[in-house]
Image: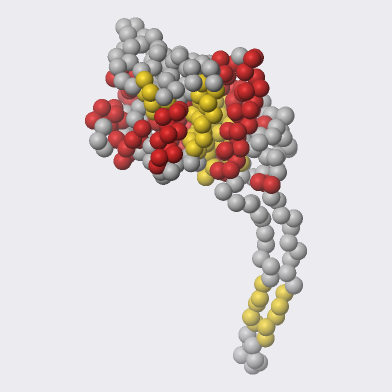
Length: 341
C-alpha cells in the first residue's frame, strides 16, 4: 500500500436563488501536493536516521502488590532526532530481553531498539516481570506463570503506545502499526503476547488457569486507562524463541519472522525441553516447528536458519557479524512488507 496525501480534485457548489434558475458554479481545483511515497524509499530497511534523540525513560506501569506486580515497569524509547523525520505516523517496535525469566534487563535490547529507530521506527526496550529468586528452585508451573505475567506486561507496553497516540501523540506514532519481538525468553514473551488469544486456551486447563489468575487474557498490568485500550499488533519478531503449543498458532495471528541457530543448546530449534538452570517438564516448540506449522495453516512467516548457530553467539559474536547484518536485513524487509500492505 502506498501512502498518499491528497486534496479533492474539484469541488462543485450549487447555488440556488428563489427568483432565478439554479446556477452551477465550478471552482478551480487546488493544486495537488507532491505525493509522498514512503514505501518506495529505503525507509524501514536502511539507516536513514543515524542521529537519534537521547534515550527517553518512561514508566508504563506502576507496581501493584495485590496482583503480584512488585515493581514499577519502565521502557527506554529511541526515535529519530527531532527535526530529522517529518513523518507524522511512524510504526512502533517493542523489544523484550532474554534471560530464561530468571535474569536480564531492558538495556540488553538497546542495540535492537537503536537499530530499528535508525530505520524510522519509534522503538522501545521494555522491562517485564521475571522471577525474583530461583531459591528454592521453582517448578514448571511457577515458570509458566512467570511467562504469563511477562506477556501481560508486554501487552501493557503495547497499550501504552496506543494510549499515547490517543492523548496528543507527541511521538508521532501509528497505533495501527505496532510490532513486538524479543530474544530467547523475550521472544517467548512476544509470541505469547501476540499469538495467543482466548480461543487458544479453551482446551488447556493448565495455561487457562494461569491466565485467569493473572487478570485474564489481557493481563492485569497497567492502569485502568491503559487497560481500556487493545493490544493488537501487526507482526512478531522471534529471535531464538519458542511456543508452548503449536495449536496456539492460527491463520489470523500476526505474521512471524524468526531467526534461530540449528545448534541452539538452550531453546530447541525444533522441539524439546529447554536447557536452563531450572528443570522444566514440558516441551517447547522452536522456530523450525513454528515455521512448519505456519506453512501448514497459511500464516505469513519467514525463518532464517543459522547453520551451526547456538543460542546467543549469533547475536553477539564478531564472527557472526555479517550473518547478523544479513538476517536483520531480511527481517526488516519482512516487516516493511507488512507496513506497506
